[in-house]
Image (cartoon, rainbow, N blue to C red; front, side):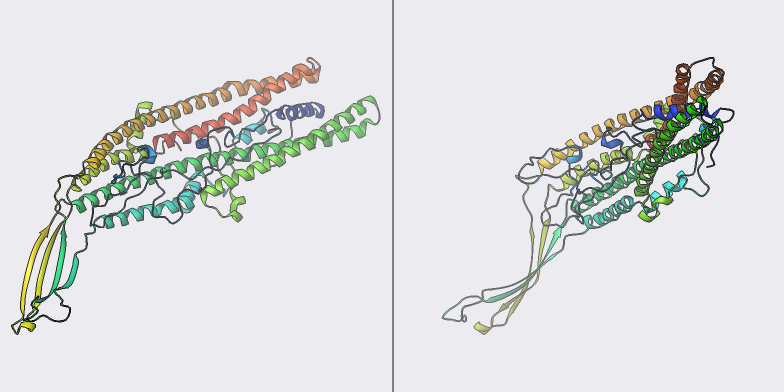
Length: 551
């Protein structure tokens, strides 16, 4: 960006304007582009990376608990708390059968967040309410830069966390396949009445017998079909959970992208301020050479020394703004899966101001969220899954029947000089459901249905609250921007021009002019902050509803 000179202002007045903004900006501890308050809770952070979590390569999925699932108790009662994220999603095994193990819950969440990069410790951008500040706040970025839509597409294609979680869906298909497998039959071969020596008239016994037995388990209570239904419901809930992960990851990219836009504007403002100060200093040096050694020249020399000090401080601000911009690039690069060597190429294209019609009314937004939010859809599927778990536990009341078939029994009659004999046999083995009819697990499964329904009601209330909060934030952010630009910003510009003219003419002193400068600097920064807030509020509303309402 080419330096823009302050028109029709004497170097001494321009120096006062710029120097005062330097000193005023130094009182600010953090700049407006900062991605997140360091004291904010971890859920508000942007960059996220995998923590230690479950053992890598373990069969337990990382997407978290399937809504409506529970861990069937064994012989001894469990001492762990049941409910919420502590519940496990394991398909109960029926004795003698090879059943599928459904996902074990660890909470479907994104990896632990990485702290956001710190903001500027010194002065912020040094541009007041001027034409230059207007252009910086609305700067569209370079041609060929990264647009917001392109950032979302790259995240969907290259984000490593998303690519890793996609394998959970493939594993869910494998769980369905395993749940539908039948129990293998048993083949048994034996020999009976084998003598120590031989049988005869003096030592009767036997005859020696050889058997081939085939045992076929019979699932009369349809446990296999019930397991398959539970596994299918688990996959449906898992798909909705995966969509919710994508929704939240898009929200992370949105925050990081807006943060990168704001960081770039702050860097441009800091660089423009240094160029302005250097131009003013050059003008003062020229005037000092013309003035010679008179009193006016000495005053200009003192002013020049003060300006040189201010320039060095402004250059420190530029260094901090550069570091902050590079940190913002790193933040976005992690989410997009960009290689480290390509991180510096992430330059946003697009203005912070995005003109869009107002969103639908609040009642319509709530209705859309109730039908679009994947986390809510996942819990609703969990109710159906919980009912399927009840059917499964009822089917587990009865063990398999074992049909025994002996196609041939061979008896050796040789020791008695008689013809060998052959025969066959059939039988049925089953347990008597007298003591254990799976009463405990059935009761737990029925209680889990009620618990899951309560979770649905709780999440529905939270979704409504999120939409209301997001809509309110957008409404007030938009109202703030409109008021600043239509009233406050215009008045501040007029007041600053009037103060400059009065100060040059000697009508007001420095104290009054300093007060006008303070108002101008506060309005300039407030406008940039308001634009960032509005853009974030627009994207937060999309996240809360679960669909793209605003561009």
